[in-house]
Image (tube, rainbow, N blue to C red):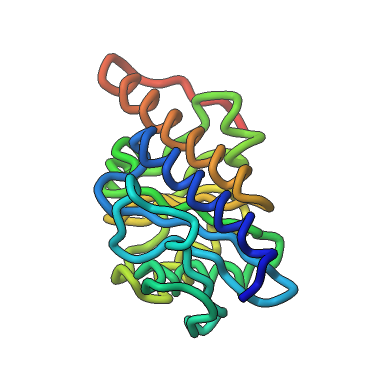
Length: 200
């Protein structure tokens, strides 16, 4: 319907496949989206779809109420989380939600990741806080994450996973990479001693 979305869909699927290869997602878990503010449309990965065979035409376009604009699949089951974040944080242009194992392990523990690496400050805006648990697929998942994301570019969602944001998909994606890297290093450091925290 809208030719301008074709490049956006291509970027979305390419990035989703990259995240899958880098093991930020397993199976069909995780999702990502780009927000076209002028049109009020979200371009989002499909629900329960194998990343290895995902193509541009599999991306789904919805509005902020979940109405289908374009697509042959259902949108990600977490579309409400994406919509809530876009509604409340107008500076956000893209969202990456992963179940990356190290970050998710701290989400399961409800344990904040302190600043133990200098790159956490410019990319993640400091420590990574945990938002309260909400039923997966509900708008409350996004509502609970918003207070953290007002201050930070990353949030651990209790007993769920992680979400990162950015002005662009490239920004949101690199933030998810730095989040998982920080979580992994913090985990390894905790196994051998007491990590030294950097003052924010």
